[in-house]
Length: 202
Ligand SMILES: [Zn+2]
Figure 1 (cartoon, rainbow, N blue to C red):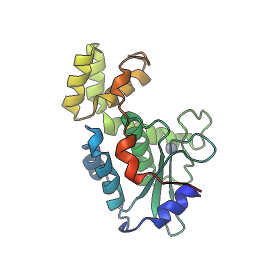
Figure 2: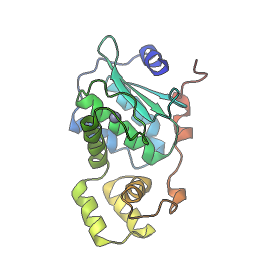
Figure 3: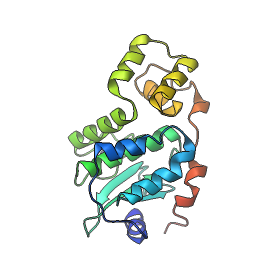
Figure 4: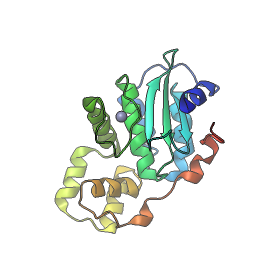
């Protein structure tokens, strides 16, 4: 209810008029630097999506939720559980996919949840988030090339217009890079979200 109520209370959010790949593309263009995070939040809200950020979501360690309120307005809740730039982008885009595709009853999204309902919807949202962040053909070429050095990763991220943590996070997920490498690259965006995080949740 925390996210629901907070989303209701957001002021100056225009009416939602649908999401498109193009609108998503304009958002993801800001995934190159943590300083752009506040602008991303504003832009999502300007699309009519009531996006709120909470320190942690309810009892289960949830990363995000997307749903529609009683008036049919879309809202998204993001948790700051990890607070890293790559996690922020993946969860945000996963939830935006649920909204764009009008997945109903998607429920809360836990990264570790192996027993998610609506597996097809979850796969679709994961696939969208992945391809929006890194064009699959370009990722395949990069992996085929086999150079996972810091220099190669940074050059690839810069070519994509993405923060390097987004590339590193994917390579770790795909087991091309060990989890403990490049830890410093996963920069925190907590400071950038400070103005948006709900204070004193009740
Ligand atoms: Zn989901």
